[in-house]
Length: 192
Image (cartoon, helix red, strand yellow):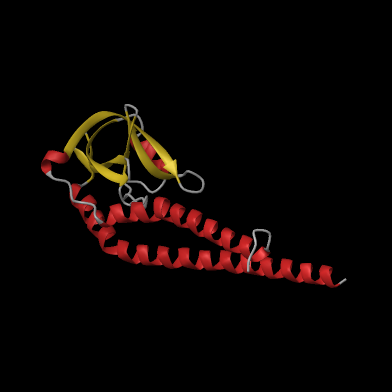
């Protein structure tokens, strides 16, 4: 029989808490955006919006030197899928510095659509970027990217689920080891 003070009871409670917290975190931060990517629809003509204004660019990545978002009149436009995988060929230059030098402050026309990204959130996904008649991002490239994301997403979901299960198993193993160590210490203290 287990009592509230025994290490075995605490271990079970810790396992349940750990599983619940990790499971909820995994679902909200990883699985939901991946499911949105998997079910992302291609934009229809009536879903498209056009914005025009002076361009600013924000970086992302470890050092913030990769192009991540286009800012026009305070609104952010992205090339990323709902699971936040930024399309590397969306912006015409691989580094933020080159992009800012070439297009920063210039007037761009952006065709975009709302893309559901999370439970109560949607972002503005770039479909086309144009500057003085020159097309920097084509709708065909973005649609191809969306199709590719949808094709690859089942693999990403599977990998994410396997990694999450392995992390939970590691947590449980560590908790069991701690409980076993505590039990041995309690036994050796009781026999002394």
